[in-house]
Length: 400
Image (tube, rainbow, N blue to C red; front, side, top):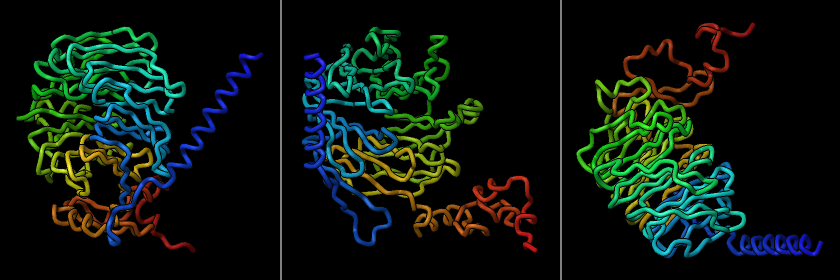
């Protein structure tokens, strides 16, 4: 009984401390856009060194960051305050931290050559593993049963069991140079890696073989992303390009990739798809964030505000916000929900050969290809989906 009372007291104390910390951190995010800016931006400054990774979780109400200051921080999206700061969890800089959707556990990796798996609620290390070189990247599988990690020097890809910390796969010399990023495919049946050897590889966890190998960049491949339906796949590179690959139909084998039209002026470091796969966001060493239209393979809008290399970018679940983090020690939140209404976005679409018209039912603007028939496309896709059985004439037929 006394032990139960002690546990209850500890839990109450922890809740009170967290509540006090939340009150102290209210409204920490600073709005720093110009008064007439089309995209609103909030800036957070709680890290003391460069920020290397960022990720939304808990349905976009929170996000996590990892930094060269050896800390991982959990933030409130609403207030911009730090909910939890796990300091000195690695002996050196933390390169990446990835958290479960509910925030109960996360994985981190760093320059100390270690991969660590954590219980967030107890703030306890569940297990730790080691590579022969700096661990450059790590990811948690969607079902939270596995962790993948990649390193430099030994160029090894390791896949770990999150329950035991045991190694499931230890792929030596998976690449001929440093592994720059690793991700799980949406079904957790493949691990995809990029490398300084300019190659992207898909490792099938069922057959234990590399099933796809992509080559097309002429410099280091820094990052990759795959859409939720696995129909779109993107890679970014130090050659300053963003390439999109059709891996769903296999067209990449004969036609290669599509280079997205627009440009970063520096090496492209990171990328992430929106939930619906219609947008891709990239970050660059030129200090800019770019949002791309993935159906038309063109730049949608460029966002500027960071003052140093951008290391990571991520869409919120509802696609209304972007988060970016940088070597400039800041985390930035960008409100992108109304970007389709921004005049410069509409003008960009016109200038690249897309026609923009208003939906005849809801009056919202949408773009169609130049060769499409306007007579048949006066309704946006959302209004069409409301009553797909009716023809265009039936929808516009006057009500008696």
